[in-house]
Length: 333
Ligand SMILES: [Mg+2]
Image 1: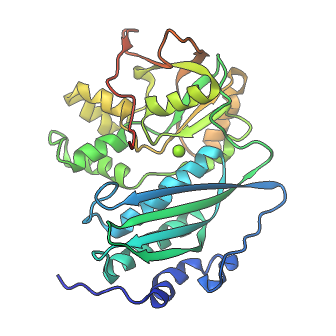
Image 2: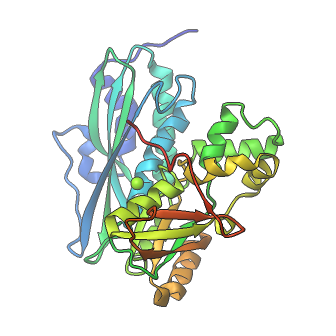
Image 3: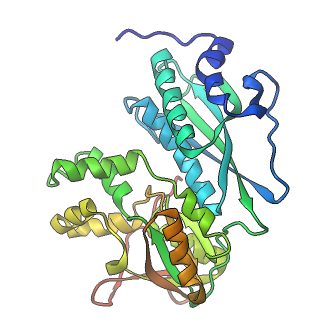
């Protein structure tokens, strides 16, 4: 294959990255030492960062535009989980010898498409060479209105547990890409793979839930693991019913043929839906927030008092029996 080497650092910035910064006036065309961003006095700054390493979080032959979009979207999903609106982002690109000009051009095109869709722009960053594998990092900045963003620590016994969208598509999409779900029809396989490669950050829903939800998190590690994070931060426990967990038609098809995939749905992660708790008297407001955001939400269980004798999150099947899960979710180490 004909590899076109990367240009020098300043040419690289001018050609591939500076165009991403034109919509961010405080970025000064990436030509100054730092960016200067205006934040209105009634909003607070929210900051998050995510990194992806080649060979671990994405594969060398994954399309570079999709890698870029997923990296930006997982950051945006964290902003959504705080109830924040996107403001700007920074990139740190540590590139190995495999990253050529065509790869970087596609990577920048992916960022250009998504920053236009989600209303933010590049504010700055750093680009370095590395002898190790390529590591891509995005830091996202957002702002949240009012005194209290969505946090993990506000769930109280009696609150309802909700999720947005459908659960399990991310994990089943990864399985489909690995060739594990051959019994599915092509349409279902493609649908699941797309959900894995291109999550939908629930930004509008997150912002609409500020002042309504008592706690929130985005589903990245797995439904049960992420609900456990809320329970730990809030010092409560929770019960969810598998029958109420919303599934896409593709996921239903996968489960019909292979019921043991339920474990993957509940603990697989990579859904980037919002998981949140709502006090019983705010259910109507939660329904309104979802309608405003144009996103489906479903109540899947409730928050209970914490009990040292019991698991923090108990999952019950259709017959009311508690289902024991081998693993609650993904851990990096
Ligand atoms: Mg998160």
